[in-house]
Amino acid sequence: MKTITQFLLAFGILFTSFSIISLGNSPVLAVVFLIATFVLSAIYLLLVGISFIGISYIILYVGAIAVLFLFVIMMLNLKDKDLVEPTSVSLNNSIYSFIIVIFFAYIINSLTNYSFNLQNFIALDYLSAGSFHLNSNVLYDLYFSSEVNLSNGDEAAVIYSNLVNNLSSAMNSINN
Picture (tube, rainbow, N blue to C red):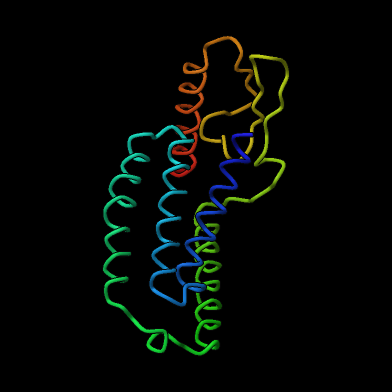
């Protein structure tokens, strides 16, 4: 459930960020999408467990900077005729921003050798109440070298030992 929520929040962040560039024909609408991006980012950080930075996003970015942008843009009193741009320009901005996102996704994919597989992405097999089983997959490769049952209370020791083993084997493969 938490993985699906994180996925939906990440998709919402990407959509609102994309909307700032492409769908916002007016500066006020762009600032509203900016505020939505900051709020979704803060919720995502709170969900992940980085509560201080999430609350800081709400207070600093949404509460101060983005609202200041909104009031300044509203006080400029721009007329609609000043903001009218042809549909082709908005469409070109959408196409260019989509191409840039695909380009950066390709660069990140080529640098990390990450292969996306939905079955590896959602890899929680619930065994019984109070314990769950994490399959070895791409997301947990740094932490888990094989299947680990996290029901005995020694999670930190298992994670740390597997992290050290995986990092040392990665360094050995780089040096060789």
